[in-house]
Amino acid sequence: MVIGRKEETDKLKRAYNSDKSEFVVVYGRRRIGKTFLIRETFDYKFTFQYSGIFKISNQKQLEVFYRNLLEQGLDPNEKQPKDWFEAFFLLQHLIIKSKDIRKVIFLDELPWMDARNSHFIPAFEHFWNGWASARKDILLIICGSATSWIINKIFRNKGGLYNRATYKIKLQQFSLYQCEELAKYLKLPYNRNMLIEGYMVMGGVPFYWTKLDNKASLGKNIDNLFLKEDGELHDEFNYIYSSMFNTPEKYIKIVQALSGKKSGMTRDDIISNAKIDNNGHVSRMLEDLIECGFVRKYCHTGKRLKDALYQLVDCYTLFYYKFVRMAHGIDEEYWARSMQTSAYSSWCGLAFERVCLLHTRQIKTAMGIAGIKADLYSWFIKKNAEHPGVQIDLIIDRADNIINICEMKYAPEGFRLTNSELLKIKTRLNVFRLYTIRSKAVQPVLITSNGTIPNNNSLEIPLQVNGDQLFLP
Image 1 (tube, rainbow, N blue to C red):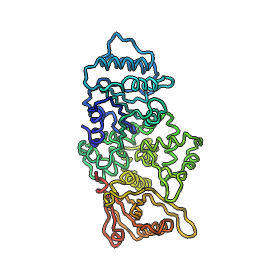
Image 2 (image 1 turned 90 degrees about the horizontal axis):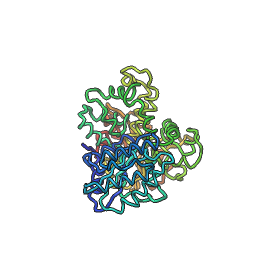
Image 3 (image 1 turned 120 degrees about the horizontal axis):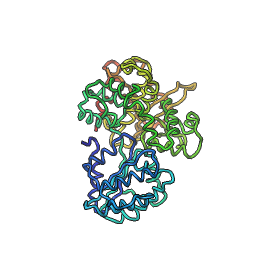
Image 4 (image 1 turned 90 degrees about the vertical axis):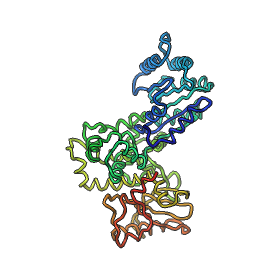
């Protein structure tokens, strides 16, 4: 059963019902559900399907591809191909022989088929441009976890594959709304507080959520899956990055540098902190991380594009650097004991902010400004003789000349707006007003995980968004 992917399913069905051949690219980070979506949409029925194998020789890849062709209907008298041109020629033979009205060809993990010096891309290009696109009955679907490969070899291709994809379907991670739907389907006995905490750990990656045991608490699941050395997902971090990027070490250096900087870093700061060479590859790697949803890029108001900041927003990666990387020889109650530490409290605040940054559409809807164009960014200023240093993690700069300063607080028991907290918010507002144009009104917004506890201060900020509203569709 496919949950939370109606728009993507509809696109696949439109491509299937087309009166011409279509070339569909489904992409997105690893574990996001690409293969499952395609298989479920087509009820596991394909004219031909093949999944590339990670880090094997080109000769072995061709051998396995050939065996799959034989198993799925290729004439056994056909000889094993020596290269990818011959392999795709055999695929043409299989398609011609097929009696399917619509020939659905599904090539999963396509990037893994492109070994060094294999000439895979020219052969694939020739198959589509020189043969398949000239027919009217083929639906070619490719996907792969190596998102950077898809972007650079397919979308940014400077040769015959340029602009050839007729459908581009990017699978985003689930929202809280979709995670709640999935949790109900999996019969997970968690309330919304628990779902938010789960999202702070795993983000909206469906695969992680399906691994949760509905007979165990969320904390127990986190211990068993991620923190124990023999946990099924304990080594997930290295697996993700090695399967998505050809040179994972460099990408890991970047996200590690960003994991220690709450508000983000400039490109130059990343190069310095990550100790990587300053060249054009850095910009490409940052673009890849943005496209995969691990990092976001934003500019301060009035700043030049070259001063843009890059900020780590992937919940799992942040969780890994705060807890998993240091989890060695732990006991069965490690996560429960961690909840009593200052490191946990610090992580909660940071992780909840990331949840909010991933749900800005829901926040705007809850505020009643869904239809108003707005720029979203973070902002900080160092202290000087006139004011203290200030950091604001979410600003909604609206086209109706109102700027909302968002204060995000994680408090499962409800947030109490104390005198000191109110003073901090007012200080941020006052400092920010010094640096913004006077034609715009500045208003605070309080975003909390479980609402506010009424007191004398709670009415000082009338515009509030609670955790339930983050679950809006």
